[in-house]
Image (tube, rainbow, N blue to C red; front, side):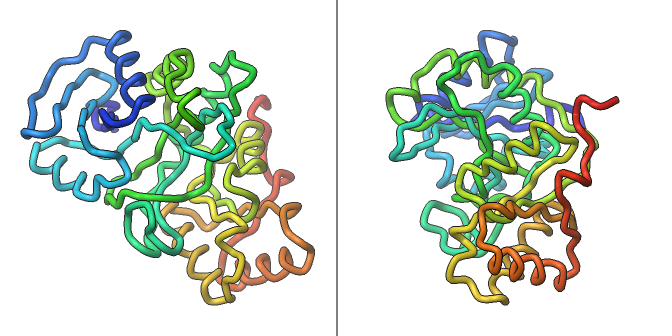
Length: 282
């Protein structure tokens, strides 16, 4: 796959999205491909930028727009803001879809195909390029829409208005977008932990493993065995893997045992950091 088969989505209603797009346009020469009356498309050797007035999470017809404009697109990256009541400065990446309800776009109980090699490399490059000590670098777990058929992830600046306009963060993420490359490491899904996936972030930054969908404890809570297995199967299928990494320390012993047994009974392989090779090893 060549890089110009990658669609980078800029929403004009989103400040970090616009800032990332502006940085991309400063760093490369982009040729206008045209407009469909609402969206405008530009291209260079690094991909296609789509500029739209619509909000990302509501772009449920993005596949149709791509096809009607006759674009040859294999994967999608949304440039976006991240919102959280904490207001913590952060640069994040995450896969999309809904394990349960679809309050914020997408389909109920439906996950979009993840892009583990590219998304995990993006996380590593954010960590590598980040020179702002006050900005957290992390995965977020799978959440929100839109629905689309192509492998997708979001790259974001958060978590409130005082950080969304940070031009250095937009500069860093634009460099990440231009330089990220897929690798051939194995892929795992993550199970357990909180919304910011601290253990999966640590493991990805230290070891040769890519993460696809991530299923946090708050989705496991109040879920019976059938529901847990369904969510794990959906996450694995949409990440094209049979490997599962559990954040064991985030669970009580009895719950960790229950989840582990369910995952094994469904035919998946549990891994830990002891199974993995350090990135800095030759």
